Length: 117
Length: 111
Image 1 (cartoon, each protein chain N blue to C red):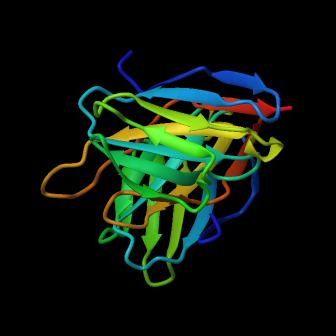
Image 2 (cartoon, rainbow over the protein chains, first blue to last red):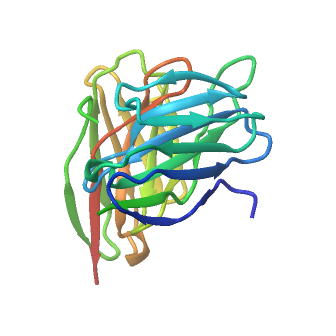
């Protein structure tokens, strides 16, 4: 299976702990996106990378959140000092952006479901 | 997804057609997408339409786009129980491909 993979699939943590999620995109994809989805809502954009460069961060991404994509391949999303409001599904997506622009499909991973107690 | 609106729930009988509606606000959107999400899973791309098209058909799926009214719809012909899921409409909001999603329409297919 060469789709987008995410680990872990589920994470339960206590308030105040740090957590880290990993996303492995489709191998030739140069763009990687993180979204957060809460119950009953659509995914909301958090941040994205073009290769290893983080190009935009949403205002939803507080100082407790940090994302990296060190070699332009896999990415990690870390949440420090977790709060109950961080409980959500964290989705990763990747796409291949061509030089000429045009349609670029984002392929989503299965997500990591976080529960903060 | 406050800029993209969808009805929250649709119930349909197996074999009938389903129509899911969506309105969006960004008139500069170039592409509009429909994704499907089954319980506990990520999003699966169903289809997309370019903003200069009125209609796109892909097997049982038909997408209609009314750019003047900023209205998008997805029609599923011969709806099956496996079509029960949440369907999200999304628009591209910038040149970097960031997606803006609606809150999703839960489709329940009854025998």
